[in-house]
Image (cartoon, rainbow, N blue to C red; front, top):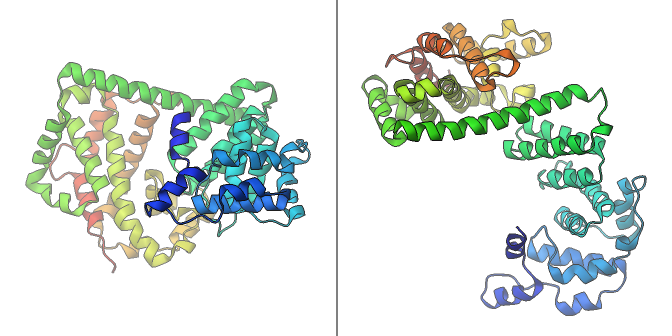
Length: 420
């Protein structure tokens, strides 16, 4: 890992080679400027200009001497003062830093083990990152959580995790970052369980269930590979056969569906038509159907609704919808929240897609898909065991074995949605 970090960092020395070959613009700062910088204000300005020249979020090794000479490095930073320590220091020196430079400095302290200093700089970065025009993103939150985890401060790790979870729900961070944040929180809970209060326990239980679910999924995937090899299943060949089976009445779907929806649909057919896969991984079939429905609905139908209604008027439905939310927006009368029910009914979705007879008239089948895919995803957690018997009933309900069954008609209709 250290080698990879060194490989991706430019140094002031190797920039000179890049300049000579025309691959890098001339820097404003040279080694002589680094050596001659005196006083905090000069040091901060040199650091800022170096990082702007490099467009990097890590300090090159030549900056170690500068950082060691910075008076903030030798200052005492306590939990009581660190929330504003770095921002007060910059204000005192009358120097402004870019968010990228601030992140690089926070990392420098973190790598040196000066965790209170790192936390102070991360706190200043966190304030800037939440401003609308920042553009930094939220990847830094993982490193910030690491710092507080190493400091043994569970409450701050928990607060930062709540930020990550919120950003994940609005698609501002991806699922992988959320998973990494979950792992950091779980490790902190394990190490510092004395700080976990009874108020936190429900959240901790949910967190550990999610971790267990991820582990179970990983094990199931590994088992799938083993069983596939034992059964001699050739996935590539099976997919080609599935596409050929779809061809007679549904060939036009290939050209109409988005790539994600088509791939998920073929997966569902592959697992349904291949005995070795159907018997061992029956739960994959409703999940694949769910992915196909979600992908095509969001790509065509929901894109149209957002365009007609305006994203600003969609509330927390402004991003891509899950299968549960798709059911809600197509059948708002069953929504318990009167606020959400009134919001969705105000969009008049039925009038926007009134040509979609199958989508609007077969909503109960969508409920079956929602329930089966949810239980299949969650396995045995919560006592919702998914079985082969349920799969047979599910396949009959969505007509997956019929070339022109309900799920194929639904997807075809969704793919043809146009403004009215």
